[in-house]
Length: 354
Image 1 (tube, helix red, strand yellow):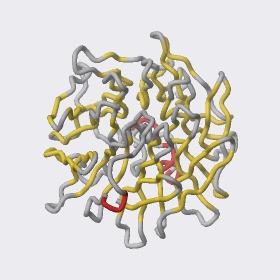
Image 2 (image 1 turned 60 degrees about the vertical axis):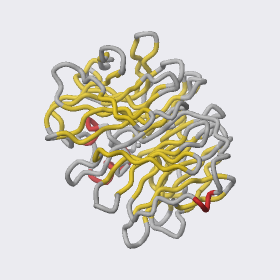
Image 3 (image 1 turned 90 degrees about the vertical axis):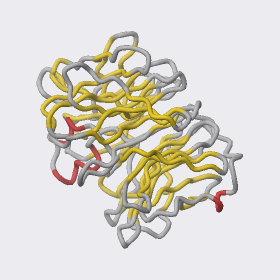
Image 4 (image 1 turned 90 degrees about the horizontal axis):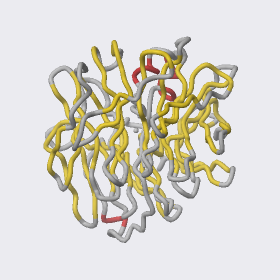
């Protein structure tokens, strides 16, 4: 269902956290909504044939989306369906900055961004054709983080430098109408990270006292859903049951993934390390993300029925789960010791490198 260094894009959080925390709290991670059946093709037949790729979204029919570096060295968006592989003509990685994220809905539309002079612009690819998304008036750049089944798109509009923007706003984008500024929680900055099929939106926004808190935007109202005792939180995804996941600071400054349900935000723990981030949730309340393990490495996890399971890293030094569909199929990426990065598909209890 849904984006890390990427792991996140919420630029407004980058300036509010210390260096090591940026990886866990920098913005939405990534997702795509769904109940996949993966009748596509034998997993062993899937290959992106690249030393650099990231998996970001998986939909109900098992279509996969992400980014990949092609033979010319350009990073482009990809979509894998059945035996077919589609690659965008547009570059998607800003100079020196990892690409942020791509989402895919049940219709197979891929939402993301393309490179423009000085930054990035929000786009959607439908049946392989590029559609530019109108940005919020007065803003130079924009990016989208999630797209739902009906094609509603959420993300952020920004001005200034991509890494340290001078202004950011949470936006509901559309291919058929004007973009909508969702507002803030009393401050000046916000981003929208996830949307469900009912149109409920989550993300993070500044409060009147300058803190960044996770929000739920529903029926035209932005609601602060709180923190885990610290001063910062951000929501990454919301399922069709209204359950929300993200990450937040504890009172002691530690970073933890959270599950928000029935008005209560609950910490989901770690895999034995210092921090965790919840990135996506399906309609069965299964949560994916990544957590530090005891040696400090980050590993992809599945959180189900109150238990966090380490999905491994295919022998690598790092892995991150970004999106899960309703069947429980998971997409993400892992890093090997040579620093090459590869997308993975996790299905039927097995992690398969793409």
